[in-house]
Length: 222
Length: 222
DNA sequence: CTCGTTGGCTAATCGTGATAGCTTTTAGCT
DNA sequence: AGCTAAAAGCTATCACGATTAGCCAACGAG
Image: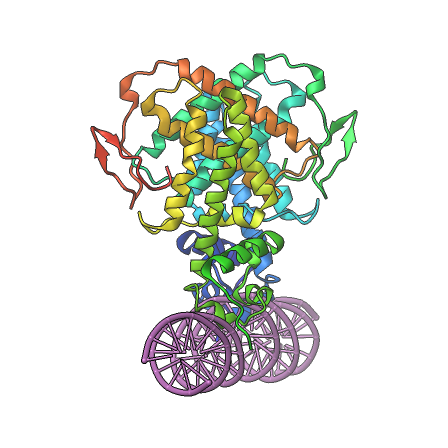
């Protein structure tokens, strides 16, 4: 019996492709092995188990998303960049639902976690988009979270069949981009009193390192 | 052996509570049965199976969310109503992570699906919030989807541990509310050409009934 | 050519969902 | 009070997926 010549990277790619076809939750070691023309236990010679597989797929997806958004926003700014990034993310979620599903719900296990590192890389293009608006540096983290929330929310709802009315989804998406664009322009002009910055609530287990009184944006997922 | 006196409603409630404790994906027939002091097969006398259980929990959660947002927004309008609704939803997602997880990822099977009906009921309070802004009636569906995307996205990211930086999450949330509030005010003033309304893209399987050229907002999940 | 490592296989364990068929409780009726 | 039928639990059992142990063949270095 000749060898199949598997590698962790091969398995991850095949798993991602299969997840896109049948859904992330339907991805099983047996099915993946069958797809690779191999028996299930053989996969364990290359990856540690299903959780490991899931994390590798998530890391791959994060990297791909970062690339997609990065290239889509090259040379654009303002609403153009915002729209390009939004479309790139949504297109990815719709074309690769399995991969996209892998990126949500997997808490990074620590600073060295490949998932965390890949997720961090995915933040870069979003920050670039925000640089096109007049946002105070200390508000950047808020704006980043807002961006992620908005576009993840839309992509997630659409990918999971959350939009059932006949109203055109693409048009709703454009409307949403306008909403955020206008919001960013308007909020940027706002002058809010300093005592609005409270820093009271803390997530248990979150990383709280600070330098010069500002959080270290070094790892984690924003 | 005396009877336990189970009912579909009892089982659903216990399942929701257990899901909140151990996580929705960890909810299992055996564990739920143990919690109820009964053997797993006994549950099948009242519910059809795990999928049925999941859907019942989702319907329950949708109803509870609708109630929470509805009461929170009573007598409020504009930014007040927006903030109240947003907080109500986020509080629910954080206090009842299991139930909240059940509400995402379950596509309604049809117009009569209890999940779809409950989800529809949950839209009411959101529409009420939007009435506080000057939004053209034909844009209401877009605004509704925008609202759902934004707050689902934030709640989902926070509930799944997506925010890892030290920046205060509550503050980011307030910032997001401001962003949307400003966006709604500004976009409402916008006058956009009619040909921007295209109605080209259609979701497969979606309900497309229309009356007077406008979609019937009768069922589905927006 | 030989040998150690590597990669795939079979067999087996364990946990979970689901179903079949049996038994007992319980409510209503005479 | 006793009878009866539906309802509600139980045991036994199967299917399937993840994972591990241990066997053996393929491959590359000397």
